[in-house]
Length: 507
Ligand code: 9PG
Image 1 (cartoon, rainbow, N blue to C red):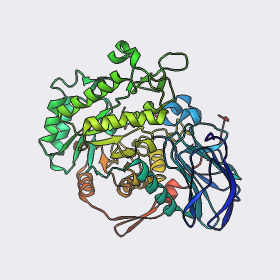
Image 2 (cartoon, protein in one colour; image 1 turned 30 degrees about the vertical axis):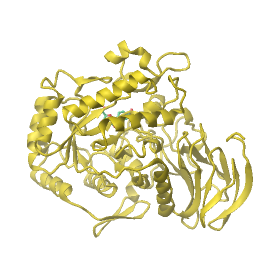
Image 3 (cartoon, rainbow, N blue to C red; image 1 turned 90 degrees about the vertical axis):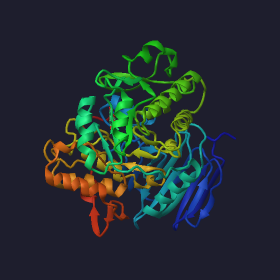
Image 4 (tube, rainbow, N blue to C red; image 1 turned 60 degrees about the vertical axis):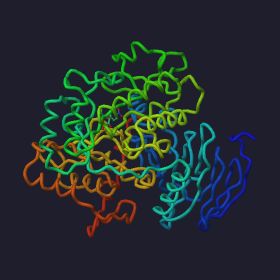
């Protein structure tokens, strides 16, 4: 029987409610109020009406959070280019509340009804006022269906995913990253000064971001780094830090030598032309076909080279491109093609390198990445007024909202909500907003900043030092509430009542 044909129709009782179910096979109980259902298309009838739905985004930058079923679905509006980069564009629709891998409905007694996939196959979960449904593009893991306390069932779901896909437990110490101060305007002279100024601060990692490479696709030092990348790594490691490097190893820009000379290495679209994998740097970019042996050899060679330079912390960006639908050499389901590629990279960098994923598909990254970005890019202002209906747009608010809606992913890898600012100059964040992003990094357990020491006032330097030295005791007490040591932190007001401005168009 095909996974698409319902092989089972019946009703089960979970948490005191009767739930008629159509599924490929019968549910089996693994607890009083939780069942596993075979992979395939699942529909659960529910009595909850137009309640709140939890939508989970496909990759690091995709919108995640709770929305009323009577509201507009949570998604990226008005920007098809952005959608291609920051969510699963193929499955996106303005016509349904739906998301990737897991979804949940709020019950009147405060519990939730959750449906989550325990494997790959590009699972989707959506809801209407009377159904909670799951679909897969290709057969994957089983479904987890449960009723219970919100934190309990999400944590249980993540634990079951980790049992099947794996989890990494290596933790990175505090990170200094070049992006959120200098962006691409880095050179070795500037970074030498930054590294010297940081010498007295207990950062564990100094990570060079975008701006060092010849081109996206050609991973050699550009003219701004005449001493080479090994020299820079050495300056970092000789002060006792781990040297970190940004790469987007699966994508290429048209101005790269790789694109010009290795056209046969690219994933193709339906017409046989190179598949457009997204837009950034003012251009379309393309994706390497990681099922090709020549591409695999090139990736292994690239990471051997970076390890040889002395880097052991890698921020791997725009990785979702390896999981886009397209024509590849081997006919492998797209999330599996991605997972095979990151398994290869993990093998090449070794078990002792730290891999931070950015723009990664969330579930398929479990077991290989040590840390994962869980929201869009932060910036030193609160909201992105120029893109009001794009929750993936850069901004402290969007980064905070997405990240704080994903704490359960912490069972799979470290959660990076993006950099914290200590500087008050060159920032438009008010103190409450600034403190909230600092607290989010504390509660999610990944501490990073981009502030160069000479941008900070004396008091800010001491705040930074105290934060990176602190080892707080954190406990989640509710959806958006935590205890940090003896301090209660409630993000609800900043993260809760998030709603789109009035819609101007439907799509
Ligand atoms: C370097 C940057 C930084 C940053 C990453 C990533 O959706 N988008 O179009 C989109 C574009 C850029 C982007 C994220 C999303 O930034 O998140 O930390 O490393 O690349 O170029």
